[in-house]
Amino acid sequence: MKDVIIIGAGIAGLAAGFELHKNNIDFQILETQDRVGGSIETISKDGYLIDTGPQTFSSISKETFELIRNLNIEDSLEEANPSSKKRFVYLNNQLTPIPNGLMEFLKTELLSKDGKITILEDFVIKNIDKEESVEEFFTRRFGREVLKNIIQPFLNGVYAGDVKKLSANAVFPKLKELEEKYNSVLLGFILSQMFSNSFKKLTLCSLKEGMECLTKTLYEKLKNKITLNTQNIEISRAKDFYIVTFKNNNKTINYTTNAILFATPTHKLLDFNYLLPDIYVTDYFNIEYEPISVVVQSINKSKLKDPLNGFGYLCTKEPHRKLLGTIWTSSVFPQRAPQDKILLTSYIGGAHYRKITELSEEEISNLVSKEIAEILQIQDQSSIETIHIKTHHHAIPQYNLGHTEKVKRIEDLMNTNAGLFFTGNYLYGVSINDTIKTSKRITKKIVNFLHESKTSQNNSTENKLEPTYSVFTQVALAVTLLLRATFA
Ligand SMILES: Cc1cc2nc3c(=O)[nH]c(=O)nc-3n(C[C@H](O)[C@H](O)[C@H](O)COP(=O)(O)OP(=O)(O)OC[C@H]3O[C@@H](n4cnc5c(N)ncnc54)[C@H](O)[C@@H]3O)c2cc1C
Image (tube, rainbow, N blue to C red):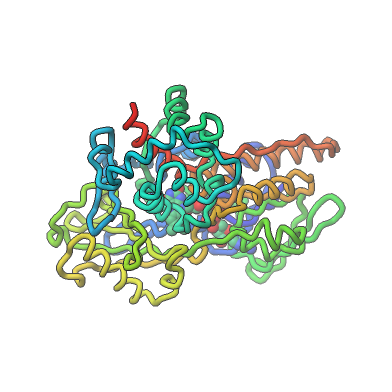
């Protein structure tokens, strides 16, 4: 009898497995693919080191750092080139720097004079005690320009979503909390920063061998606890345990287990709908995912007027602009490309341009090259060489209106002592940091559950999860920091 069967070996499943391993709990991870890592993948091609999914930890969290240290790959951590602090928004046909500090903020062309003054209204605007979309929240508190020129581009880079549909409560829980507590997001932010002693280890970073070094090392550590290439997983419930049956290399394998931890995206949970109450299938686990194509390209340094010092740019939503943004990968991590080349990683698709991700690779490549040539003022579009394209059809879960309620209901299901648990980036933040943190918390719940079932105490204690704050929320907080600088 296993204690836990984990379904899915992305970072969520692997991080949970590692926690269970530390707690001496017997588990097995089942993964359909022939590799672990899910959307985390690094490839080497033509002298380039390419991450086809996530590129960076925006700032490494305590939990991620702990995991990396426990895996003995601390030396692999690679901090971004200091110049990547410079970030741009492509606005009105030019790359406009995101201000760092008060003087730059006062001069920034991201906001007009009126736009800057409108921000001050945050100090006097009344709270609204209801769920709001990101569009409603930012327009109400900071004005339309902040939404259009700052928040929308940032969310393009994180969710590739629609500000009309994304829930401010789910995407920016910290800002909503500050609003509620201090009647002003800015005032709350200033006060909370004054008393903050948060973990600050590394800011923007990655791993020297690419992000997949993390999941590959987890695989090496947990190898005999992971079964790859599993097919036709079926789960049936006995009185107080589960029987899991699946095919592996044409053999049928059975496990009995006390608990199941689902670490798959929510659309994959539908394969197990017979285990879930109907409302969970039709509603609570019914979470939209937007598709994204990641387009990796290179260009000779000699073809560019500008050396591209910085992280890259995000695009505002314009009718003619399909690109979500581009990371200047070789500026951020110079070892990833031959010395005479620039490596660019662009993102296209998302809520507004889903159909683009269904085009042929050649069409996607042409579209991206055309826009990049325009943005970076490259005369000859054919000098941009496409090295790799990867389309993630279910890239990022959308924390749309109603999301917080869905998460509460999923918590309720986990608290019923049925031995069913869930982890993944659809719960408490979409970043790798948040996913690792989520898995760590859910693992604690599983350890409690196993302990309680072993001591036959079925009146389990409620271990309600506190929402954690997305690393990407920190981006928003950083934006707020800029605003704060104005009033410091
Ligand atoms: C293009 C892109 C860029 C990103 N950029 C960043 C970034 O720069 N920084 C950052 O922090 N985050 C980023 N993210 C987010 C981050 O990568 C993800 O949130 C995180 O990797 C999700 O991990 P997961 O384990 O929840 O899901 P997944 O990675 O999707 O893993 C799920 C696993 O479950 C397996 N599975 C599915 N169904 C079954 C089944 N029936 N049986 C068994 N196994 C199954 C899958 O094969 C997969 O291996 C990005 C994501 C994408 C797509």
